[in-house]
Image 1 (cartoon, helix red, strand yellow):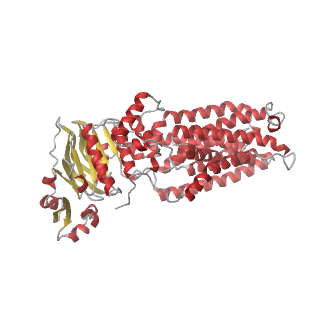
Image 2 (tube, each protein chain N blue to C red):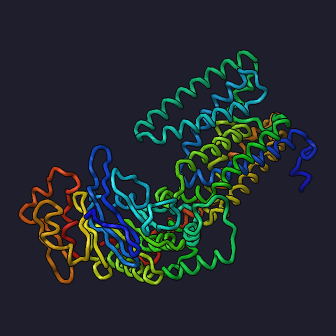
Image 3 (cartoon, helix red, strand yellow):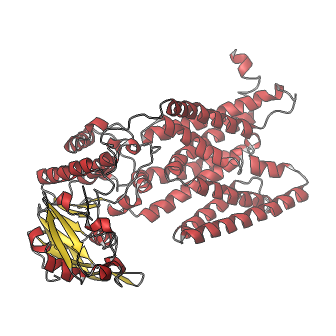
Length: 284
Length: 301
């Protein structure tokens, strides 16, 4: 898995990443590539190391070993090359910020000084608001929006700087099923329009199945990557988890179920293998 | 009417002039810094800095200074440094350390204030430090107050976008390459300066009112950060100037010939403004408790 080699076609190459945090190995020899213009899902249960991996790609978490290449080059100064939607950003209703103000901060939020209003700025923000269907609440306080609406605004904030790669950390968590569907559809549509590669983390792969080109499955700090058909198989996931798991297909949905070795997974010595039942079986 | 509102001599009195100028400058910087204090939920940090300022102010009189400004400034900046260092620690450690440091600082203030009053045999020192001295400010202090305000304003203006983004979400800011901790430290310096200046005018104990009150009111009125900052500055200046006017008039109020403390009047006005904006909002919320949330706020699965 660590044999991923830089190539011109690859947007992102993650190669042999090890991360140790307070004496525990969170990620072990994680390697995969995100192809230009593709939609890649980073799937794993809570605690599998998804957020840590995204932080490594962003340059916020230095790995103990391995490297990250963006378009074949090591990560230089960050800024707008990678767009990022963090997990669980919750805005207080008292914050004096409109939807359009947060989107505008995506344009030049890292620069010093006070932004001066300009026609070009306003047009760019307006265009982005339209792209994510946020014009209806463009002037609403950000803290008064629903979870799904906030998610759309954060996506606009991440995309307005025209990044080459968009990282989203559990953008579907805490959304109801309808908003979940809308957000996935929106991400797929906008990134396709703007030719942006996507790496999106989720604990449930099902909402992403219709749009996902590739999957990176993270378990026990290790990763398997490829197309869904290549990765989401009993033998591949069993070897990843280190114990037997079954992959069931139920009405277009995929359910990963711990087999006979349930006990060893639930109480395994490695903390990161611990799962809550809802991560395996999602009934809807 | 106007003649009755402005008592004779209001516009020709030198002490009133100084109070109006310094009062306005301090209200502006408190409001600008305070909007971020409220967004960042750091009101307690502001109050801690004013507690430490009390120690610095009382120590400066012992050291022979004619006014407490530099004592306030040095103590508040030292406090800002301390908060920044503690920020990296575990939360429980931080709370303990904060409690112990603030307790020790106030204990020292008690000693210094006692020594101040027993040495100079004037009881005015305690009142000056704790409750301000707007009418007895030395006009020579104006340049220093203005210069410190300019420094604090420059820090805010220079880091405006980065500060706003790191206040909204440190994760979002860090991912863009913003040095969140550095920006937070610069902001603490601005906060220290604002608290020191507010301590000078309405006193260390009341400085938090000027820092938090006008921004809290402005945040109810505006949904844009720049407009909220402007509104907070206006409210702060209005409360300060009205307070000075009322205090000047109050020599004719009962008990006759004593006058009411200007700091009390300013804080009372700030609080009234807040109630004026807060009460209608609360009332609306009580009358319409089941207001429909915005679109897409479907039930959780």
